[in-house]
Amino acid sequence: MDQTAQLILDGKTYEFPIITGSEGERGIDISSLRQKTGHITLDPGYGNTGSCTSDITFMDGEKGILRYRGIPVEQLAKKSTFVETAYLLINGKLPSQRELTDTRIALNDYSLVHEDMQIFYQNFPRRAHPMGILSSMINALRSFYPELQKDDLDINKTFLRLLSRIRTLAAMSYRISNGFKVIYPRPDYSYCANFLNMMFDSPVKPYEIDEDIVDALNAFWILHGDHEQNCSTAAVRVVGSGRVNLYAAISAGIAALWGPLHGGANQAVLEMLIGIQESGSDIATVVKRAKDKNDSFRLMGFGHRVYKTYDPRAKIMKQLCDTVLSKLKVDDPLLKIAEQLEEVALTDQYFIDKNLYPNVDFYSGIVLRALGIPIDMYTVMFAIGRLPGWISQWKEGADDPNWKISRPRQIYTGNAVTDYMPIHKR
Ligand code: ACO
View 1 (spheres, protein in one colour):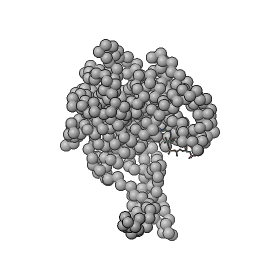
View 2 (cartoon, rainbow, N blue to C red):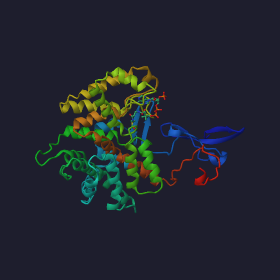
View 3 (cartoon, rainbow, N blue to C red):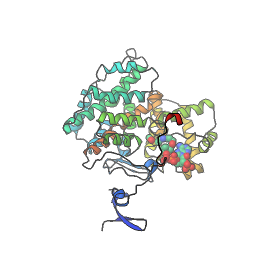
View 4 (cartoon, rainbow, N blue to C red):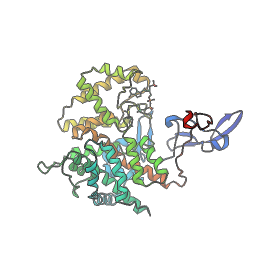
């Protein structure tokens, strides 16, 4: 017998179906709640609300599990490439050799951006944050490359264009904001090698590709690939639900990711660590501040809405951090500070009671710093990694025959009906 949940309201009993996911997660389908009872639910921050069913990513916050299309992220970070994982997320299966080659050819073909886009960059103020620039430029792509959405083949072209060009646009923003010559993508380099080359090559000091660093960047981006209905992905789905074009929906996702409670945490962690280093504060004082209710300071890179144990991505990120620093022979004092912070926090009763563990952003900034990525580009690096997730979530929504415009309700708590008062009487 199908299971149902019963709700008793004003003495009347209502039944609602229980939905069970493929990993045994259970939810109460309340889509008929208002129609049947006249009531809505109230769930600020949506901690208890499922906005969709999805085949893309599975996470178990209690056990620290993350899988893309069923494959554990640990395996992907070790064995896959970012391009292959992007294909997996968007298409629902790993590519064959032929499909992977075709994807790589397309990513190469689409990697150049319209020369006129450089004019946009020149007009942003010098200190403009790259996340604001990236969000604007992705939205602007719609004007340069009117979206093709007639059939599957065409929409795939748009996906590949975006994947390829976000990398070119990100590197361009760094080069132009620093007054450096723009470096064009090269057909003989892989996706990640090309990004590093576009960032760091110089006419007077050619950039040498180090395959270990390329592998590290692949793993870094794979770890950011998707994370089900987080703040930025929810933004992409909500904005996309109005049937807006893909570029605009992704641009909204980038804007949402920018916040320090979300993807912007990687920059905030580094700023926090630098602040601790420069002030010479001892770790115990920093942890004490993070626990103080009257202090707005939080331990950045700690805590997560879903993970109530160690974020599996953070574990891999720490290993990646050790590998990259040792390969590049970097002795970063910020790593010591981060390790001490982690040690103190993980044995502190406040953090234990609230299940606060390092999240993906805790060590990622130290990896990026070792790679030479400037601090205000950290969240841009996150955005490039998250793009396949945003695309696949947008696509899943757009292909869903039951897709509805996102339109939550509210409980109104303002004034009762109030007469308009003429200005001379106010
Ligand atoms: N430092 C100190 N205390 C914390 C922290 C932290 N980093 N995170 C949560 N807490 C405390 C809160 O003060 C709250 O305490 P209370 O119950 O006494 O009020 C409790 O733990 C629960 O925290 P909430 O903010 O209610 O949890 P929520 O799920 O809403 O927030 C969030 C999750 C935003 C990630 C939060 O943990 C945080 O601000 N962390 C720091 C920022 C960060 O690292 N963000 C990146 C997240 S990963 C990502 O988005 C890519």
